[in-house]
Length: 349
Image (cartoon, rainbow, N blue to C red; front, side, top):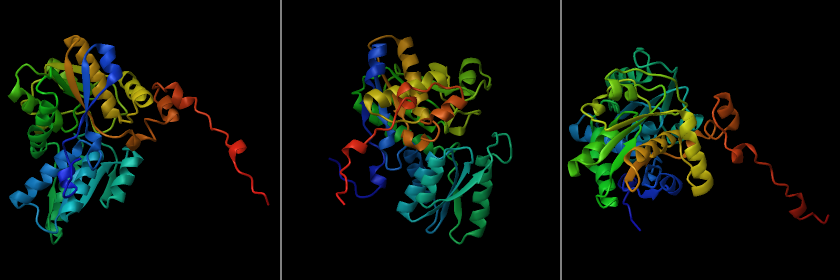
């Protein structure tokens, strides 16, 4: 059993978990990197640690300083926990459309949370752009100054996965890996893992699992950033080439509808005991598509990004799913309360 001197040293070195039912379905070995086991319960802890460490090393982040970030939630949680552990403050800008569970977690962990209307990236009041301007303002006004984490265009994010996630996957599979696939939010995970794996073997196929409403599937297929449809997933789906994505080459790109993806996590919870979020659903659906293309006998790894309890009010809410025209598993809609009246001990008085 590992021992950690602090929270920071517990980030990373997450296990691979075999996804049994989709492995049997495809005839491949499909493994999920259990990033929900990081201290902040998501893959974003890795980026948060590297971004803050590099800001300290460069002198941009000084004692008593503040870290500002625009996030769908998980990077903000990672930033806040790492900041707490190192004695910094955090200010998080989040679109008001994100799950209440993530907002509650950010407040619980001590972040100053600023909710803003959801706007596209081209809008000057997009949450990312607001966070950048706010960091400049606070850097001028606060005694300890402030830095902007800027996860989308800060390559410390990508380097976290070049130096940790990718090498871990290679070691855990004994170098016997045929494909890696995941969705893109900032681009750091996919581009970083791809760089690490391709440095070890040029035969590893790299795949993109893109939700509807995002533009990268179109970009890697046609060279044009074009979006079609929409998705209830949070934290993934990109409409531009971030700095972290620059230079990434994709072998297999798939556009994944929510209706195709969500049944995988419902089935995984019911039959394998894993409760995961919507981005993991897209990733698993992408791994199945890649397995079908590569053929039986291949080993494919994807990212299990975070726990499903961060989306309980949406992903695991039958009324919400029905309102979006999405599938509701029978076990979710057919549950009945258990009557315990006949097993209660009656008060003799």
